Length: 380
Image (tube, rainbow, N blue to C red; front, side, top):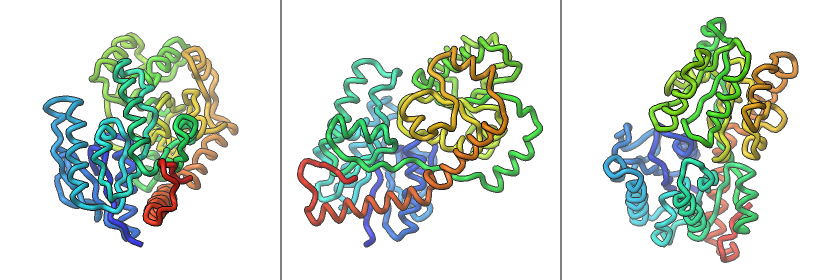
């Protein structure tokens, strides 16, 4: 059966922002290839202004965030929801809940509502206590007003089961294997100063950037440490100022050329992944697919993806120890190969799109046949 599906909750596609936009690209185009009619809602000021993208219908909705700040996200989500009510979609897939679940009473009543429950947003240390309290409330509203749920991490699936007694469907993000263009870039750069550590992240406290750089700063390493990310925000300026006396630490700024980024990951001596909240992170999967050796912050999200195939750290002292002792020998080569195998067999985009389609169809059929127990218990 071919369905009419809408994807809400992102700034739009093609991706110019983050994780939900990234997965919406792949899932929307993949569902179209499987015969479904798919619409993705885009901010009206998104760089892409066409009405279709790879067979996906693009719905441009007014987004006043540029004018009034974060409050504009709520207005934008309201506008998207009201438009979706008029178009009578079979299924509405909502990516996240931060600024959409407050409009839960307005969700299209005749559409099946599936929410990807995001990554425990209320744990992010960048938010004030009041904002964290609101995000907990928004999470509760998302559970209340959605029919079914997706978790991109087994840790989030477990949390939702314990907290709300709902059985969400675990579907992770995916990553592409290295293509010919990336492979060529890697070969061109293979002998150009490959002896460096690498970190790529948004400049936010919960990404443990300060912890990682403190550990490196106190080490006796003679390698450089390259940091990819926009340092223009408040925390980014703090970080660059704190470590500006260490010539080994090189802030590269944001790099949007994915071929170049993946070549840098592949050619790094060790790739640091400091994300501590947010579920399965796309940049971690891309580092795995780029055949980087990885050191990751020690938390359930990263452990669920990397298992035993990474070095783990919890503080600057452990980072220092890793920096000073890590080798590139047979054991480390096996870790890289094991992570590549996971991308090929577990975090493969085609497999993930198949899982999305299967779950969407299951939710639609169960909803229409009224076989789901009331109370939004979800499907496993």
